[in-house]
Image (cartoon, rainbow over all chains, first blue to last red; front, side, top):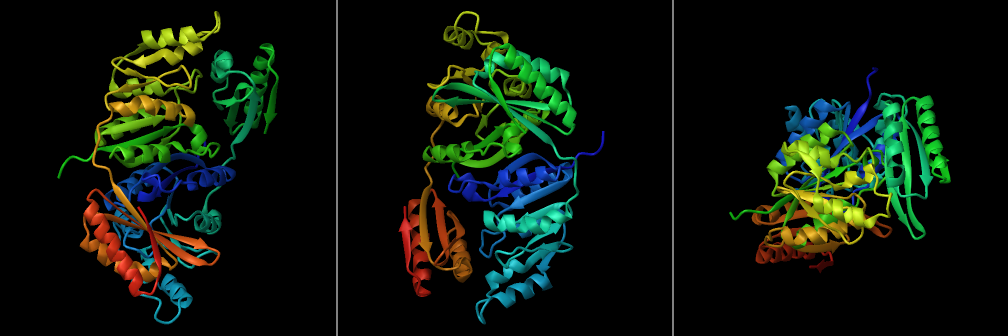
Length: 248
Length: 248
């Protein structure tokens, strides 16, 4: 089996865990990484607490090809991600000359205060992640990419990150929709899944005003196997007299 | 220090990690638990892989007062949460007589097939979680509450779960909004945070067409301390000549 490229996202911030802010970064990253053939395998949400961030970074970076963190890199006291990541890697942290110069150039004289200078602090050995929206950079250290939590800025940072990532075989997805309760097709699905081990078949019920339905999602890296499993599912649905539609 | 009630949410499902489905259950649970004085401390998203679910359940149930899982309790082959939770607790799993009877009564003769019967399988020693939307129950085992992933059903299940939960002191939140970049107030905030250790002050920048702004969120269980920190922040903003507004 060839090596699969994997990823985890670590969402850092009290505002997510209080329900104040709805995270949308995980889904965005999952889709973007999908286009590169990289599998998102795990997500974690932790509070603005140093030991929680350190522990999560160290667990995730050991398990996955890449780790993407979001949140906690601004100028205020609750922005502790850079320090936590330095601690996780057991390295020092200091002003990064380039980051410092970029930020210094952005502010009017007297505005580049000590708190704002915090945004130039980067763990030793890290490289900057630039973005076209805000001047404040993220950084990469090892296989960990540390980014802003604000979605617009995080997305801009991924433009700088994407060229640094390896490419895997992209997963092919076929989605079959049918107006049938999933329980009617479940036995056939289980059998088809058993016969097509290289694909993952997901069954997602939905409730429409005109009655229950299901979306069947077939995912795999072998296009022929995805096609074959999808055809088998369509055949099983037709045998039940159910009309289905397919999207690739 | 009195015991704080804590919680984690474990979101189970490939569809979240592929970006196909946007999770909204974490935020809903965070807010609901907040009204009960229970702190959401961690979120995890894992795929439909048994060992991942087992490991996450066992880590989280040892660390937090309560664990809430969402997803993977339907009739199809990819619904493996009940088996994984039984494995995590090291107990058997079998048809629950009440769940079986409820489901049997729901279906027309001949419709209650083997796959649908799977939804009546519950780990030994678990109690059912009923819901008013679908007949299929969730279950509670120890401090773990296993619920549906479909938000409408999960929310209905929480109506049955809520009376089972202990109550803590509710966190008081004050939110101060100001049209100022957060970097201008960051030093004052750090000082105020140092002087008010029982509250957590979060700083969340936003970008409006008319310029940058910040929301400062003060959270704590001591109302007087929250009020005192909020007043100190308003004072600091006024000293900068900035008009602010406060929401409790």
